[in-house]
Length: 298
Length: 225
Image (cartoon, each protein chain N blue to C red):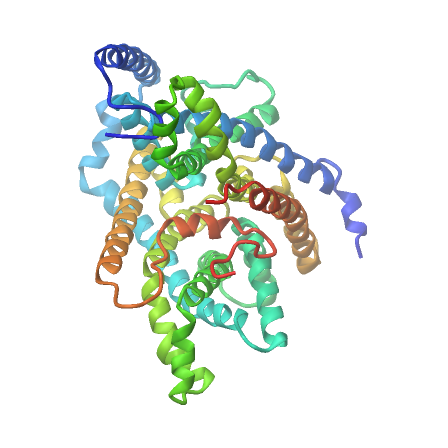
């Protein structure tokens, strides 16, 4: 174990490490003990509050339908946002100024705005200007907000994927007589999508997490609002939070693991000549530096 | 066209955005401190601390911020009795709980950014410094940290901008910041699009200069290798 910061520990350092470990364990134990005491005081540890999770009813009535709605909104948003993102990502690379500039403005605008504002706006907009029934309106609003935001992030991912390809790919395509649109659809886009797959899967984690906003503020009946009704029914606030958090952690952990597995696999097989855009790319793109000061290839 | 704005004075438009700015600043400072501590744990020679740091980051990053913020109100405040020094002032309590939740969440991302900064310093630099006879604290102070901090400005700027946008989640526990005011306005007034545009503009104004300035700074200070 070498690191920039320390050498392999000698006898003295080993002793010091043991002391640090002991102090740390003591602090951690103190915290756990306090949490345990308070939960015991407030009756949150009673088996009756945890029991529902070992039986079918809490899952079939609340948690699973909630999770299904979370995943439904996330999947819908992803399926719509991906082609939209591809279109805008390609438009940003257009040779024509009148395509490039508006596409860039749209992408940067929706990337700079909190998803919650987009959802609230969409919800109110649908209520006033369309006759979407009020039962499905929250779903529409959540998906619209997610699509607008994530399509812009995915547009940046697509753009970065295409820019990561060597220039020779385009030149060779032109040399064998392909038109610009043919070059894009048959040469660049397939390679770019492969390079971007890990980043796209990682973006799914962001989408799954953002659906929770719809439950908290738009009455969309996903996992977080299912937790509310569940806790109102069984009076188990803390257990319900813990269980819902674990569900989110498991789902997102599976997605993250899948993304890194994919990334490792793509790096190993190396079919395309471009770079593989890993999961860490997603954190940068989700921040939205307005003006596009980042950008790979520039 | 804009006269409906005068109907809102608690909070006013500027007041609500001021709360957003305050949330960002306090959570930014808090998550910088807690995130740096976490990063220190993750690169420390003590395996137990490394384990704790890794577990914290992986767990917190995968929980939606909404769940964390709602938990601070329904879990921490109601069940654990954490009042953040304001047991009677619900407005202040909500604000401080929101800051606590934002710090807990954002620190995981700060930790990853800082850790990646430390990792950009080649091991050879520290080895060379030790070969020259510098002590551990000298290696850290003179060689590693200056390079790490400079390479970390860009990622940290991204975290800060994401944090600015994430403060809107505080609306879920009733903190009177921009998103909550927009929700109220958009439900009561007829000019949906105009109100949406005003708040969108507000967030662009908050994030644009930050992004541009810190982007410029990170380019200027980047260690050329």
